[in-house]
Image (tube, rainbow over all chains, first blue to last red; front, side):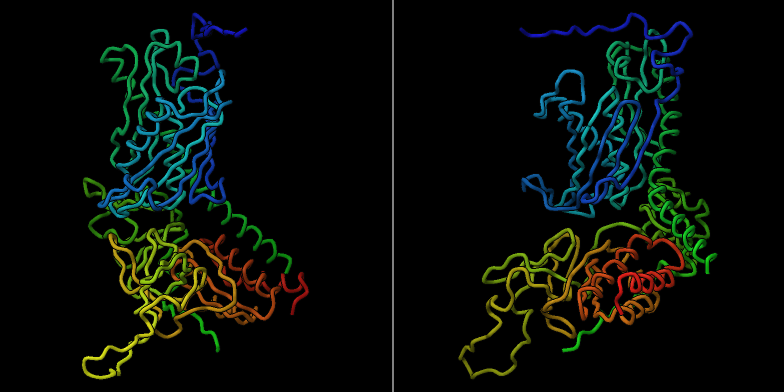
Length: 259
Length: 258
């Protein structure tokens, strides 16, 4: 017998005290944690925990492209492999990459490409492997954020980092950083990515219904939220080196005291 | 045959007086004063040309009126004239393919592995050139080579003709991040001299991040490898030479080696 569990969503996405179901305010982000240099054998890597999302990203390259026909003679290419673990979602996720994985891989590569200097590496590829260990809404935004962090950790020359966040509309209200249930039961969903080099929007997808006024409000809220995430990204990147600096200066002071 | 150290007369950028300990990240604004400063290595002007922006994660350096960023991580880009350690990965009757830790595989042609024979056997008669086949090296050999030509589009070409160049027998090859190589050499070779004198090893440091070393015994070699990895890890900190010296002396006592 097949066990069928119906998707059931709560009727209201706001609690009686005006907060969201997970206790956040409308413009509050989920707790964020980032770390770089987590995978030893990769050229660059990063790990991100964003609410219940847990995502690893690893960067290899520039290296030879296989299959060879994908290589471009005048510039390098950026290949992104977004994959979800079978246990990352409630129903078992089939491990084969489907339409959704291919789409997300493509949009991540398209939205990070403008900040890279791919013309310096003709005939080669940068390969970014994104593995979603745990998913709870907004994985495409989280993956973009962590992929740009991993690329920076690999020492790939880039104009700036890329930060992404989703804005949406639930129960007629504009909220920042949708969780899984808000994404599914909400009215509209607007993931966007920003390149800090010139403050341009690099990714903008839209699903649902919203009027122009609300849309503009979403963009301003999105930019504000992205700035907060950007600071966390910068801190994570610096922390890897600063912690070594601090431990060294601390230990040398200590040994100096003993002598 | 006595082994010699690599002739790399590059200054230690990490220890320069102009190098600050400011850690910068990609996209960070280095200065908005574009009248007095010019974007140097590892930097770029933004679209409106009023900010200088870093491209790497690295250390900020101000050299005269140039702002540079010394990367802490990155890949090796071959330049003509570089002496690098290559590993033969493949060969066929007309050329060797070598891994030089760059984005492209380099090629070594047999004519570049032996000196040209000037003497002719006589008019019209062909002589047997001993550099017309690829019998000289085997797959897996470690070679010290010089880069003859390298650019963005074509595969780099190598030569083994020259001083210190050729096959290395024995020894260990380790690799570190290529941008941290100047730190292993130190300012005017101070770090490498110290490593050599303290561990009694022969070291050959090359630009592509590979280091060849050979010591009297395995204990010294292992100590040296640990020290080099420590240099790599702490490359962006100050007072490194003294710290490494103390580290080696401490470890010598701990490990009980002379």
